[in-house]
Length: 344
Image 1 (cartoon, rainbow, N blue to C red):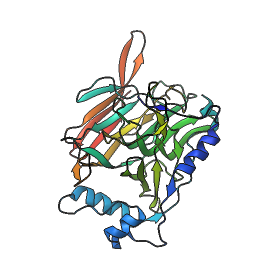
Image 2: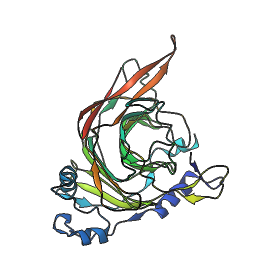
Image 3: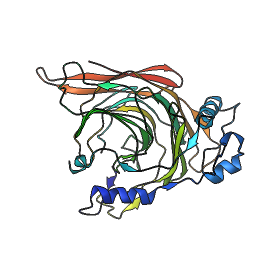
Image 4: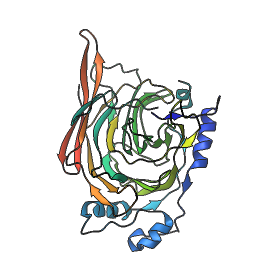
């Protein structure tokens, strides 16, 4: 398992400065129209190329929705994803077993693995931001948190599994912020999560894209289709990790492309293993659940969907009697969509 390297005594603000320095904005000309651009221009700017309409129809349709009006390109404004007080108290582990249906303390959703020795180099997805509230019988004064995202490499037994991910956060009763809080965020685990700056609210349709350009760099794009179409594209750089105690030299983590994920999460408080309480949330339907693979040495890409996904069922541990209680369940709806639902 990879381990994060932070300088001793580094503050949350110093970590934020490091994140800002290691990411770069895409330079997009004013009034740029991706629909009118050729692939060479898109590549020079850093945006994903237009997929082939005949051989990659679903991914082509998603690309068209992502880059059609309403559309404005905005610079990312990184900030800490939660009030600073939380950073003096990370995402928990995912699954407990390996089968088509798996149990998890903090993930509810679906993931796929590549076939034929290939690796993932793109993942896309869309969802509507859920409404969150205190669960039936829950403590109305407690803190509740959930996040909805797409990612790569989240199954941590794989080498270089550091998990670049992007999505939205939905909270209730954050410290000093009573009521609901919604935000857009990014995390390249094991870095801390950071906000993107894109405003979101319950019911907004979100489109997200991760596009690997080098083993240590990923183009990240998130768009709010229902808020005038702001899109936030940038290039994220991988964190520095120590691979194991036997190899203590810090290195840049690399994307292995071992898994692609679409997840509703019960996140951990940053810099800890303490999980938020899961709020009750309105059902979330993930659509356009698509990923692209290529051979290890590069070459022709191939689109993948969730025809045979592994489904993650989130649970909590209850007492008297001691047992597992399912709190969030996924249900596959089709070859590129599924739904997650809160369970009382």
